[in-house]
Image 1 (cartoon, rainbow, N blue to C red):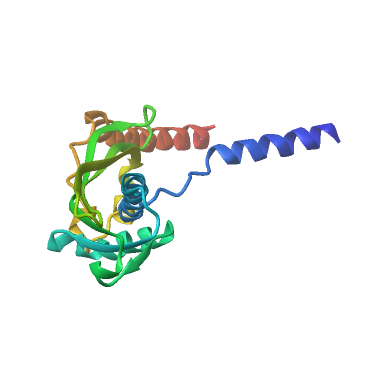
Image 2 (cartoon, one colour):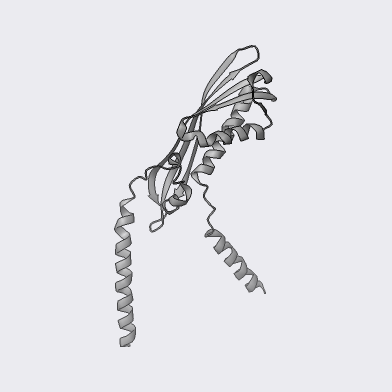
Amino acid sequence: MKIRFFISLFLLLYSAVFINAQVQSNLTVIHGMIHKSVTKADSLIAHKGAIYLSVNSPKSLEILKPVVIQSFTDIGYILKSSDREADIEVNYILSSVKVEYASAFLEGFFGSTHLERNISTDYSLIITNKDKTIKSFELNEIKKDTVNLSDLSEIENQNLPFTQSKVPSQPFLTGFWEPIIAVGTLILTVILLFTIRSK
């Protein structure tokens, strides 16, 4: 009974090691960073209530405007269609979103190639109070993690260029060892085949 329990436990732990967490797409990470930036903006506005929100961005990033608007409503702001109806006017300017891959490396000697993923957003806030005093802020968000090279087709969106980036050159050993291992395995298989047959 104990042996069966330990075998089951071993198999459970062994399989858990090989279960990889789903890597977030670049667009999902960017959405999360925008929501984080709006949370940061909330502390700078220091007034939870009715605001007139204008969102500006380059044409290539216009698809992200609804994410900014939704983030403001999610944290409790009431958005007005006119600055006359609001207590505060907030101008959120999303100036850039950048995805970069850096330092390709092997995970283990014969492991898969991984990349360091760096995603950054730059944005500005201009807050105009009822008494017409203006405060402006230049801010940014940065997220760094690692991704598997083979997952790039899944984490990038081919219709959105800002979710894509150039891939750095791969480590020399990746291209060097793989054909040697493949040929070596084939030769070893043939040798073993003839050795076993001759016996």
